[in-house]
Length: 434
Image (tube, rainbow, N blue to C red):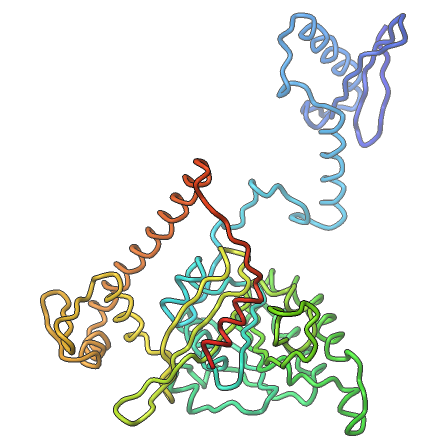
């Protein structure tokens, strides 16, 4: 004899007791049966249960035709969450309408975009750029603002250090008339206005220069020499907890420029980190990309120093393999020299050949000296874009081949792994800088 039981939320359970104490049962959702009349539910459930019982006896049952109690319970939970918190509060990852490819903003450096693996910095994420003084942190951030403005976006520069040079920003390519500038009095004010602008959903890039200069109000009100334990770290931790959700909704890139300090006591002994960033550890966790930028040399023209050679190491990357490096030139008063990057990469990958000691050849044309070919690429945009396209295809294909080769070696058991502490790479960078 079949018995019916209403489980709640419109779910009916039909079960048939047996002599041995066991019972077979099935659960049904009226919405899935397209039932419009509540009075029809028991009869339809009985008929459907009889059909399922016959299909089991015939051995023709399938998982697609049967809805288990777990599936029904999950569906009820999803419906309840959607009703309580709104559509989209919980969704199936593979069935969502969100784009698979993360939208990005270029860094202004061709080699750094390639090293990042996705063509730039991801939108809707936190990015940290840190390094020693005069290493190019602010210049790189201004280049990112310039690239975002080229896409039609609005940008904000929070100058907590009160040291932004408008002339440098214009030389880099920033449209200063479309750049919002704030020079806050304290850290709480800075992070509060950042939160307000991000929640508006109208800005594309927000740069905070720097996290080390975000002074808590309690420290400002105190006396010189007073001890303020971890006030800045608590401030950063609280702010990032609030900002991460707003960033995801507004697709804003939040860039924190950070300073480094010498670490006096190293618990790890030899090989441990000798430097530490300011503001506690919260920023390290919330950042999707962390860039360690350092000056490795100088660029000279005759006896005059016209720029610096910069090495950027991707310490953390949630969207592609980390620990890749990019090297480029920073010209004083101009910023990143894109043409120099292209010439170096083109020569390395044999798109540009060197004839003798001072002549370069490209597409059948000869150029005397590196400056001549750089000037040619700067004046001929189409040639430069074509060379960049070839380099991009070459570099991406080589990365894919490396991954495939590594996979084959792993299958054949030929690969040898060497475990190196991540802090040792910082030691190497420090040695190179010295």
